[in-house]
Length: 141
Length: 109
Image (cartoon, rainbow over all chains, first blue to last red; front, side):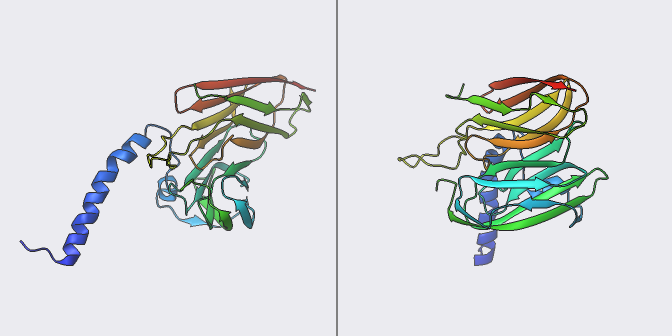
């Protein structure tokens, strides 16, 4: 059987996916933030009352302050879409939370969009995103 | 146990019932991302705190999953509202199985 260039590429990408599998299996032993689709399950995501505060320019990607607020949310997840692993954090709010907000510091590998998705009490999803320009990346290279 | 892990928590000593109180937490931890390479080009294995929770008298305030993208010395600020005096319990879960706890009493008037 003779492979065309295209077939070889497809077969090759399958092989790469197969070799990557065991790595993700190890990572799954810890709670994982994953990618946006893991959270929303493909449900539609609209805009709404969710605020993500990020600096416009971060000189040091190792520690970028962010703040996210989504009144009425049960869970907020933050993703850095340009990082090697996009998941940053998943925040669930309990009965005693006075507000659905939190501030933290994150690592950004380079200039990219930071995405926040909130799951509301009725099961719907809302999101917002900001671009952050990073002068020095924060993943060590 | 990872070296030099020290939790620090800021909670007001007293508050009014139902008032939103600001809680700040920080734990010194290197948060090794598992992405860095050492001089020989070997990947430095991941070693992070992967979960943080805050509870008040058995009721949850906040439950956070941390990924390697959280900075060294993970810091979180959030708000709680409580109706009576009691103790806040803060718990951090390390990849190496270690669990760090901190307790703060608050007087509600």
